[in-house]
Length: 318
Image (tube, rainbow, N blue to C red; front, top):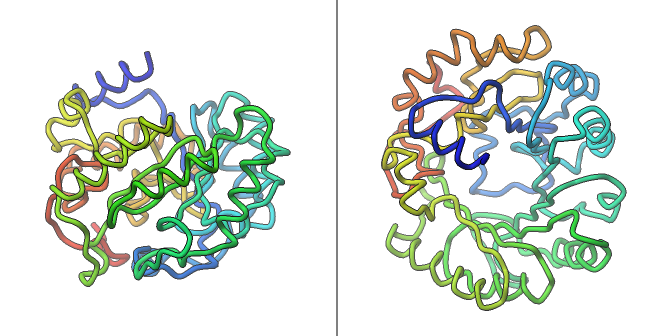
């Protein structure tokens, strides 16, 4: 039913009554410096969200289907990260709590809390060099394997995420051997660094198709937001509308609310000062929805096909 409602909203250009997915930038610090990451270009401050700010933010959130505790930093660097998880478990018990990590600080403490999904972002199997992303780390893979062996039952789901650069079949096979629940393949955003390159669109389709074929054989789910069937493509009006912003907000370190993690600069309100409903229904969000095609020009992160457009920078204000 949820997918049907989302299909209808996107098809008709509507939005949910309140945002259902809330992504929170719990820290701007990271223990890696990956070329593919736009954190520096965006001007993300290298500091943590104060726990009091976190609590105040969620005091303004009456309900949520999903809370993502990661933004443009490494969430496990936050000294009170699991206090944040515990707060959500107690105060928003219906929300699915998720986060993405580079795996270097991942330990078994996650099993002491109700976390729906942990996504470990890597750049291929151990030993495969990458010039753009995370350094191939035996520690990250060791932490991932230890978590998979230690978890009891189905939670947390553990997914492995990688940017699409080349063949991904070996990554899917490794995920199967380790017992991971899925593999997520992510399109590289090259707008912030003209020197970055990605496969042609046709090659990207082949990479995803082959990875999914291996996944079917091994019983490993392979996800890619850009691998869209006709229903999704129609809901997105053949790449003319984004499939994210109908029910989603991004909250930065200071409680500012923006329409997307890629639009930190487009502030629509602040949850330390305003009610979520007023922000979601407010003038700034209305202006965004009317002008989204122009504001999001060049972004194909969730589109089916590649598109061209301008760079998104910290100084790119409207």
